[in-house]
Image 1 (tube, rainbow, N blue to C red):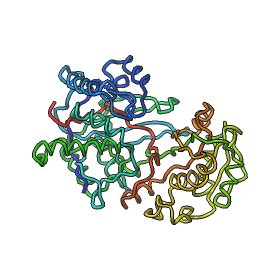
Image 2 (image 1 turned 180 degrees about the horizontal axis):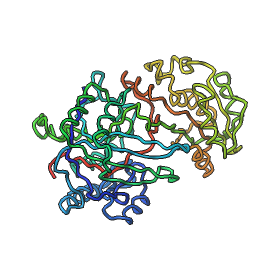
Image 3 (image 1 turned 135 degrees about the vertical axis):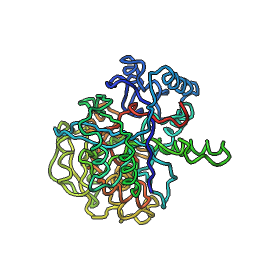
Image 4 (image 1 turned 120 degrees about the vertical axis):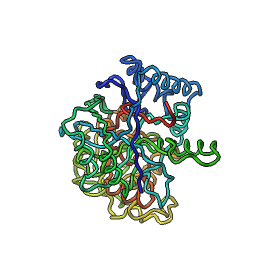
Length: 447
């Protein structure tokens, strides 16, 4: 049972917020932060990104300064808390492959629950520990959710979105912001409204109540909220009042069936290889993989990416930067990981998990072919580009000796595995575009 609540959000009072909000902290560099603060010193990155890079904990004084900045801004009116609790319809308009999409959802508070087989909030992939430490230090210092968890829910008729957006029909948004896409090639328009009508809030709560939520992005933030709640509960003698704001986390919820929701692949480039070539790779693969006859040049990887689904399940692109070309391979078995019954990484995995392309890439291609043939005992190292041309670009820089292009992970697989309690490998999905940070903040104590 999912329990959502309205919130009295802390927000910038300006309607135009392009210079005030930011992409998520985990895609920003020190140069990005400096650029945003040069445009406006009140940009949310001054609070949300106290330490760069945020993949590990930074110095205590950085988080203390972020907390002071947030509460100074609230007391000075740079940020203002809404006087009435509400739900916040949220729309992002963007283009991909020359198609314009309109992704709709809502900001709300979701009651926290621990992950488990009886729960209704499900993670979908494994996470790294370093970012959790950074986010926990920041949450302790600010007592706030500064950016939302991205949650999905099943809603074939789109009833939640229809109900909420009908309430703001013909109303201009109260806040707008235009941010660059992650590759910088385009922009995403974010629009926000506030709904405080009790009847609408009640209807949306009831529609979401029987749903399950699947965390698309923000696993670190959700885990941090669980830890923060536990810390407060321990200090309170083991029990927080039911209405304490730390019992909730800030979410953006979007229906899986929303026509603006797309999932893109996360590709891989690999380092620590010696003598990689397509010829040697295919020889090492033997009968486990079949190579299709077509070849793609380094400037045709975007075309390869688009065509991969047409080549069938588990078709992948293998790029050799020395030759400047890529080929397409498909496993020769319909269940290619079932042939390794003694692999301890696979013994407890379901048939559905074994059908994930990212699992096949890791445990068939990397573990059984690439590492034994080209790594010479060294550990493989990866980067995770989202755009096909970035695969060629990263390899051209010299650090990476091969690229691997994947198809997107299907939403049905995300739902099935989450519900079964199985975690996907890291970087299995890329929900495009990222949510904006700074349009809605949620205080975990009083302002």
